[in-house]
Length: 273
Image (cartoon, rainbow, N blue to C red; front, side, top):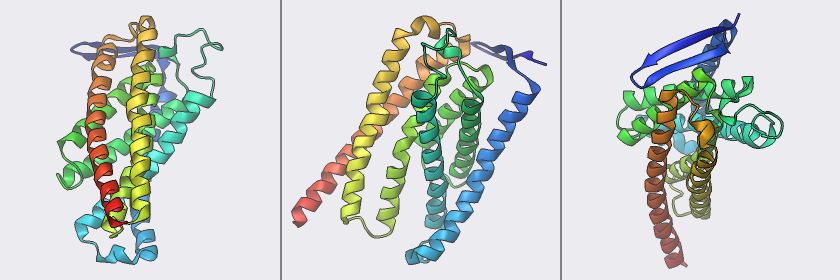
C-alpha cells in the first residue's frame, strides 16, 4: 500500500505522495547495501589481482596499497555509474518529453533508484575510508564533494524528484578512471611514458566535456525548465540552486590544476625529444 512520508528540515520537508512504499524502501536499502558490499569485494579483488599481475605492487608501502585498492573500487563505480547515467539520460525514454506529460523533474524509475542507491553505497564507503585514513586518501575538498553528492542523492531518492539533474552530475564520474590511471602510472614509475602523456590529454578533454561543458548545459537546461524546477519541494529547490554551483566551482578549480599539469607534462616530453 502506497503511503505519504515527510521528513522535516529547516527549509521545508521532503514530502512524497504515493511515491514511497514498503517495497521501495526495502529496494533502496538493498541498493545501498549492494553498493557497500560491492566496494568491499572490489577492494579485496583489486589487492589479489594486483599482487598476481603487477610485481611492483608488493613493493608499495601499506598506505600506497590502501590507496591503490581504494582507487580500484572508485574506478569500478565510475564505470558503472557513467554507463548507467548515459543509458538513462540518452537511451531510455524516462526523460523523453514527447512520451510523457509528467514534468521532467518528477520522473524516476526502478533502475534510476537502483543506480542512486548503489552510488550512495559507494560514496558512504569511500567517505568512510577517507575519514579513517585522513588526510592520506584526500583532504577536506573530497569530504565536501562526497558530502554534497550524498546529500543530493538522498534528497532525490526519497522524493523521486530532480533525478535528471542528479544523473547529469553522476555522469561526471566518467573522468575518474583517467584520474586513477594517472595515479597508478605515477606509482608504477611510468610517469615519463607515452601512456601517461596520452592519459593526461584524455583527462583534460574528458574533464572539459564532462565537468565543465556538461555543467554549462546543466544550468541552461535548468533555466529553460525553471517553471518545473520551482515545483520541487523547498529543501530540494534551494539545494539545486546551491549545490551544483559549488560542485562546478570545484570542478573548474581541479580543471585548472589538470591543465597546468598537462602543460608541464607536454613540455617535459617535448624537451626529451
